Image (tube, rainbow, N blue to C red; front, side, top):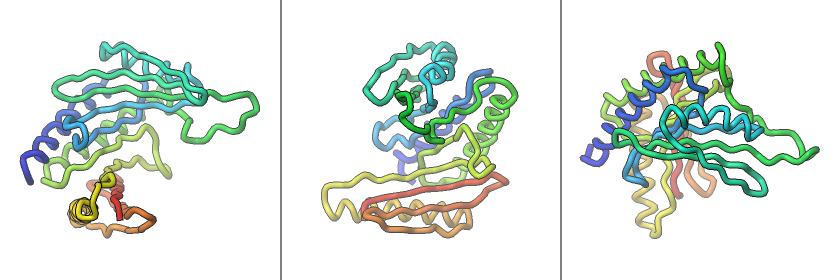
Length: 230
């Protein structure tokens, strides 16, 4: 593994420790992502929330902004209200993001994706504890010298189970040779994870190549999604 990937793993481990510390505080649950540093050359730790109303988004993000010493800004478009804040800590990019649709009366039903996690109480505490368990698993996975992924630490279960989700997504390079190289690198990364997790990747081609691994490791459900230009 080259120096750049090793540095990304070191920074991801730092982001995991940073987030684990945050989860010990009584703050509203957010969906968290830990980037691979590929595009920004800095690992980004981002907490985000989608909710049907802007006031619910603020209710989740304002305590975090206060805790982190960040100023939360907002922007309105004809369809959505967005909130954001960003800073850095210990060499990690740190960001908060939230959005709510600007619904009109009688416009239609709100999609499930806009349903927020619990704000306070036992359900919120249970969410933080589940996320902490996922982070503990991620910390152990990082010790196995595997290809760098972006990771999602979700704020809710899927099909009744908490899942740690890793991602590889290659953008469209300019030349055919670059396309082939990007696909080769991503495919090798996916297959290394598949061998480690003892799971066969499932592949589909729809303009791009999409691959998914579903497995478990030490009792934690793990999903790895990858896509690259075909």
